Length: 141
Image (tube, rainbow, N blue to C red):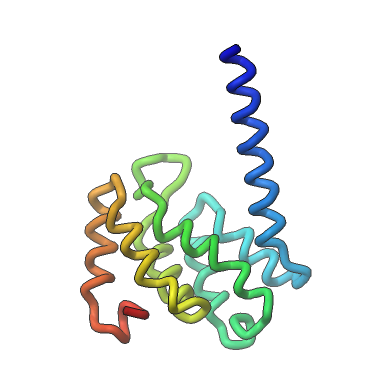
């Protein structure tokens, strides 16, 4: 019985991951690479992808909005470098906030509020810092 429940959970997780990948898929090869790189374990790669998504000629592409879930994931992730497999340091978070502000400014405040509720103290502190910045720095209020 427990094995069936575990198999069902794994099947649901796989289906959810496939649905998310499909939702974030772009026919544009540059966007596809940048969106994929938002999930990279290396924070430098994630930060670079977020910064490049903010470039005007990339941000204006219709499929650029498909990067929004990946940017939100970077911002709200509870891990802050404590997990050796995945480091989500401030540089990639900061880049994600600036890019989210460019692509979906209406989502900045709610995303930062979600990050402020993190289990990780450094993530909470980072989010509160952003939430208390002047509007032009913190994004939509």
